[in-house]
Length: 638
Image (cartoon, rainbow, N blue to C red; front, side, top):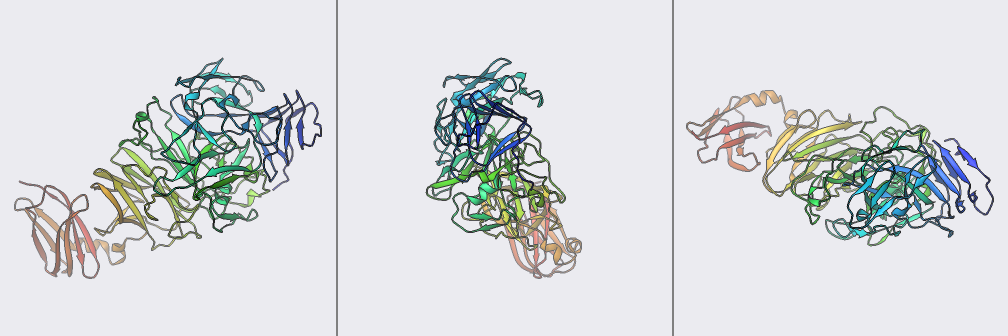
């Protein structure tokens, strides 16, 4: 890549060498428009010295140790939320309280301001903890401190730590904040022409001492289905390569020249990031009306500088005690996640009893938010990369030449499963030559919602529920697919998206109990199952065994099935005189209700159905030369 340059839009008043590589003297400022600034070491912002990042500008710093910035001045950077006063965003602040001491400092919402002009902002009103609704107008901003929480080394269904208006959010800690109601049509930056709040997208001015250097993020793990997680995020006033953070903290080394990754062991986290999405149509603070969930990002690529996989959350509703309700609505959105923008919060999951994940300057990049650059704060619609797309030049601290790398994702397909026509689970199957069929850190990802009463997932290891599975491709591969339900549940399954996937012509769900194959690439598969968990009955395949054993049309046509409901008799005609090993009937739940063995080569078989309940049944004929045919019949009483 080209050498990173120090670029300023306007520099007012002088820089003085006071043992800082970049020093902004009192009552001076640096203004940057649509560019980046690279400072190899530290920044000192003297009292009333300001550093304005405008129109997507960012600050990169290159020190390799702990943070060394200092000063009573402030860096100012804008970022917008995406929720109204009823919905949460997860944040991670790029700044802390200005301080004469060296190093990063804590953050609190008193460091958030309402932009009024290109370099000026107004102090908002911080509402009391018993006030629920934040508001905005053309002249004011009121933030509800009631909804400010953090989540560090905690069980995902355990205690959140209330923060309110306190300045107790450590560098690298994330926090929750609900948006505001109303609108603010003020345009602070005429070049961007963005209003402060055209409706549910409040712009905030983060002002304070810029975070930099290595930042420790406490993580832990506990045994059981609900592991500990930490709410963290991007702590810098620049974007970060999320792949690098996830991989290097999950036991991988990364060759920054080639992008190649090598697993060396001793992971600190599970290698994935979990993003909260809250429905933008939220209209109540009551938990039993919440519609939201966690999307999952995995950097499951062969190369650290190519895009990973993101699956949208299963949105559901919640009871007043915070437990999941039994109903829900659709799924969330698919966002581009490889480059986490300024202010973006997400959760990570520890895999050690206690330790620290580390965020480093080396992960910092100058990437503007947008779909094309794979950097989104949950704003834009989804698009799909195709072809041999390589990155444009991306200025970065690690001196990586991104232009030599493809941004394409590994071959993969996404599966959409609709449960009882109420909500949707998205899962993904990806292919990486370095993956195994078992669990691989940073290649396979578990769901954040393991307690959903009804769900579908990949049962790769133990009782863990995986929503992303990555493996080496083999056309003969069989991938287990699990369905669970606390009540009778109808599952409708189809391939919803193909991404760079041309490894196989077909994709099937194989019902092993009925030995029936369903095409989910061109069609959908639907089945109603009784309460319970099915982890061994279904699998995804790329071959239909029936079609490889002969002419499937001829085989199917050789067996004709006729149900005489007047006499309660099922007749099966065997015109090719195949040697029938078994003839079985299954109800719509997949339960076998009748089984006849070794029926021989007769031309027809008659079986009484008078004892069976009314309904749709599957007749399955299995021959001794391993051919299988299934037919539907309708049984009803006259």
